[in-house]
Length: 280
Picture 1 (tube, rainbow, N blue to C red):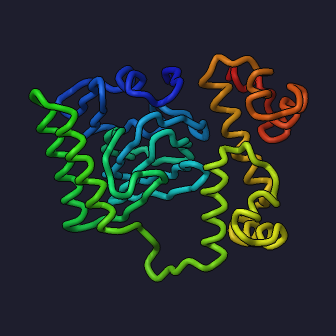
Picture 2: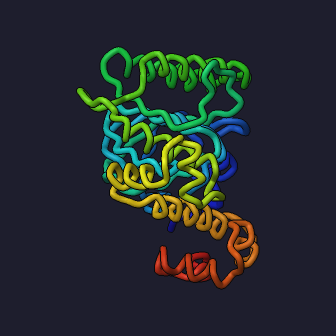
């Protein structure tokens, strides 16, 4: 039976994973070297989880599809994903043989802070070198250590990954439309679903509302409002599942005129009422 997960904080992770030589679950950070946890054993598919900590994750074996802050990632052996703090993770699909290594982080001092998800496809020396950082930390936590030392190692790992560069499919060059869409999604995440006007987004992207609508539809197959609604529903699910707010308080926090409007919207988008979702 899956445990109830309020949010992915270190205390929650401590309850989920066994403390072994391979898995360190401390007061300030988690290092998991040998587990299948970020699959379906502990998590429900298509359920958003709030990552209170930043996470560096290596795909050791298997395949996974994760959505992080509305962006979908198809991950294979050799991929590394770096999540920012307070990201929203949804596990869409995984293979039964999924095996990952991951560590949490917070408060890193970096020239380029982790404010958005970064994906890297590694092989050869690059893959082995990133594994070396994990192994170094695994050896460190078997004895007395300081979090300052841990952070220095994590800072070195993230900086090393940045020098390798982001993963892009071989031969793929982003178009102007791709860039506009990526900036729209980033702006949608920054606004956290509180802004729901197409002209508001278009003005900040320096294009007309019609042009924005056409680009988003062409690139993603969804309309601007469908993406905005996805973000609002994501926020609603997190509040309903991970807070003690009453439904009318969730409605108010999300900016709905009244709980009735919120309930109708939630049911239209999910097929469930807010109350039934909270109880599921």
